Image 1 (cartoon, rainbow, N blue to C red):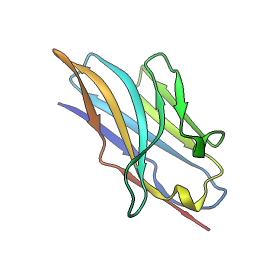
Image 2 (cartoon, helix red, strand yellow):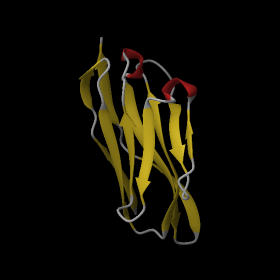
Image 3 (cartoon, helix red, strand yellow):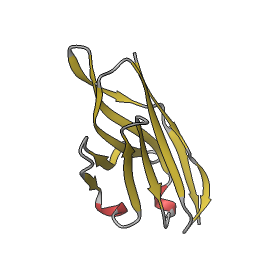
Length: 119
């Protein structure tokens, strides 16, 4: 079984920074594309950023220049550095990944971590 566990959420003032981390554990061969999604209160889950196995990145326009996604393939982790945070970044943030497990590639979600940005 594969697990994705997020950490690093919390409360921060506008303009501040937080770093989210996601650790992948369990029985798998490799980690393909990883991503961070978020779900603001009362809204649908939305993509924030993705990073491929070769570390190519993609960001939603609203976070470009403020957020940085990275991965450590030796530690099986993916991180999201969030700078210049805004109140509209308040959401539950979820780690997501395509993981190569025996016989197939499956998509997994973490349990989520809350990020609250006060004005």
